Image (cartoon, rainbow, N blue to C red):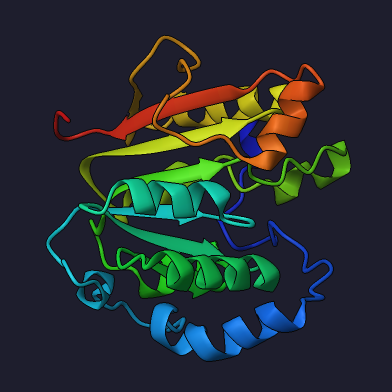
Length: 233
């Protein structure tokens, strides 16, 4: 991507708040469960590990989990790992809260807020052992590309919150966005690609209904896997 297109994360919103209509069940779940399982957004760094029952366990950040299908499955399958999901879409947060209660998940916490502001304002340096960015909004129209999350300036911004050796795992079914993400991360001194170009499918990642719809339309899924330089994982 040309350097002229670079901008600091947060200068342009990477999302819009779309339909937030919720069923009565989800509204009730949000009201009742958010105080227990959501971390309030704050304007100063805090130790997010301290909210988990196992604060010394590895912790993975998920940016924009949508309706949280993969988020919930990963947390349930890997109880030895803590997960922090950040999402602005209230119905998605409410759905995940219901699943946390229904499945008795203790290693998943949420922040209902803009992920860029969360990372910038309330995450201490070298907090996370990994980061998932799965099917972010591709903003397909060229005039909206400036709203894409992953562009020049984003890797060093994210790297501050990651421990040396931490991984960043990205997936999308939009080829031009996939190539943009690949170029952006490969040009960042803070990260190295664990593969030559795109990564093979990571079998541990659950497929989501959204992804299944794309596969049914013969969409290719592009995956990327980078690690923060400074240590071997």
